[in-house]
Length: 179
Image 1 (cartoon, rainbow, N blue to C red):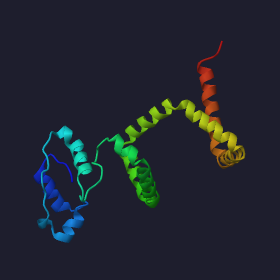
Image 2 (cartoon, helix red, strand yellow):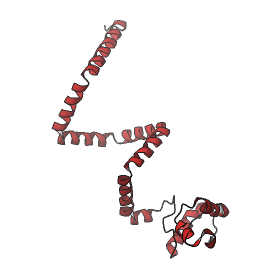
Image 3 (cartoon, rainbow, N blue to C red):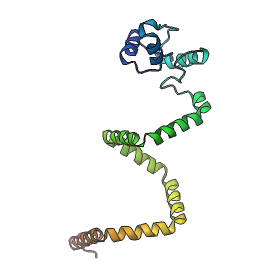
């Protein structure tokens, strides 16, 4: 079961790529022994909706997935736990692959990611501050230990930063004396 705006191209893609759920049938019976049938013709805007209808009202189809791209709240609500569990399991089993994909995406979309983060931080200032306060309260010893370790490991760098700040501050005072 599927939808397309170019039937002949869709059939040839299935034959060429052979990376779909129908592959089981193609392997078992041979591609040329399988049929592709147009069940209904509709507008491009109705494609996914019609595909969903046919999936819900047909039995014995190979592809019983929700159509790709369909924003079907009923489907998501009815299968929320299954979707969440499947995604969690995939991420857990493919940590390195997921991390690599995320890294590639972030590198290719730096501006978009930065803008998205900026919007999130602006929209959730209070929530983030409250979460940080709660964490600091619950983990006082851990936070204190981290800060101590950080300052010890970065003593020289911090000393240089302070010296640079003081130089700039003094230069600014000389050029802009306070009355």
